[in-house]
Image (cartoon, rainbow, N blue to C red; front, side, top):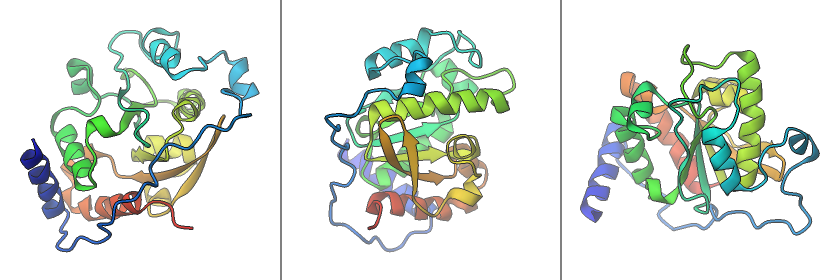
Length: 232
């Protein structure tokens, strides 16, 4: 297993044109933020919307609750370790994800695994989720759906309280940060959630990297920022 992990990481570095690795000293910056003693689990606005106030309850609601923008069939839940310190968010499952019952499957998923292996992460050491639990008929969220999904997404992130959040693609970047990947990547952002601000990065979605491998160098730069953590 260790050999497979190392080979996967090396393959990603090679694809991204990396010939020198820097910053090898391990850091603990991705440790989950300690819960504030007096912080409410849900802000008043979220409470009015009756969103579940624990992660376990939210995950169950995510798969079976009434969501106007998400079909009830074909929902795919979050996966991984919410206590890992790193949360990764995509917009919605692909058709292949729905068939497999797993987010980021197929060729895009294999590339995602190599990307994470390159910074010492695997699916068991991050928390992978989506803005919508199901794929819409159009394969995208309209403006109203994106606004509601963003509200729920902030609530979800607030329940997890990761040390860092990585957003993949324009849909996530626009919904949560108000700008495209091109506008938002390359710098840290502070995402407001009901339980506090979360340090957030944006990068290119794996599906786009598969079809446009020349963009891998930009994604590698983003992963380097993620590994190094927010700078004071």
